[in-house]
Length: 355
Image 1 (cartoon, rainbow, N blue to C red):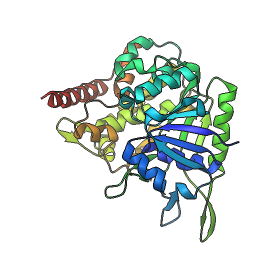
Image 2 (image 1 turned 180 degrees about the vertical axis):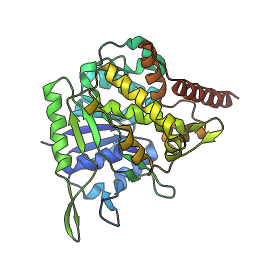
Image 3 (image 1 turned 45 degrees about the horizontal axis):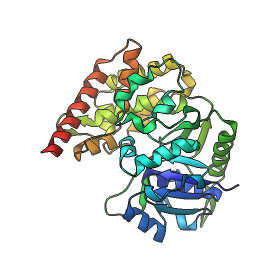
């Protein structure tokens, strides 16, 4: 059956939406007015590379089986939806309009699937043995999550990489690394039926070409383990946050490969921390596989670009991991140094805003 799905965020959200539309579902994107106007008029487009094909395919939302609409947070009636996807950066949820919508989503008890690098605080409460109050310092505003029941929140690891290319309209997305979304299950079997249906719909998606119908990359994979989406943590701390430099930034490839042994050390420290929390080794990704993938990541990570552009707040998965390690009596000097560097860069950005 078709579902009504609310996605907060039209940038990365468009990638997930492009796959879900194949199931005939209705997607509503919460976004800025100029984005909404363009999407409502023209839909959105996603350029997707296909292994073995010289040219990528172009997914046009107006040509897919489902339907898409867009609008501001203030106009959303949460009672109209079956599932919510959180596709914005974590600091955006505290903003006026979005904050009130988040409160309504939590109170509605709709199943809520996050697609953030930063796991929602209610998701962290599903992991036993953590001092959740101590983790609040990693969030821009932990109070955003107060109305959410942890049982209704899950995490979908945003492993696929995508950008809005310069010179293209704001309803255009280009996939640069077509890996899979990896989603943990909910606690409620009824909520999981929705996830399993979406997983099947995405797996069955085919694209018509002159050579016939072809299978598309970027699947939605549903996993029983809470820890599968946390495999991204090692990647973030060994690569993404190490794109941030004292006076600038570097691309992810250089962040990982300029000092491969330090990258391995950071990666394996976080890997081992996840094992301590309850992950199985098979839930996670070996360093060698990540290091190979990082060779194709020729752009700085989004956190580094945001800092360079003067952002006063960014997602702090680096600080979240540091706080969890500290609660277990653990630390890593390279992680501590990088967290301190990001702290300094953010404080400098905030001071410039005050002036």
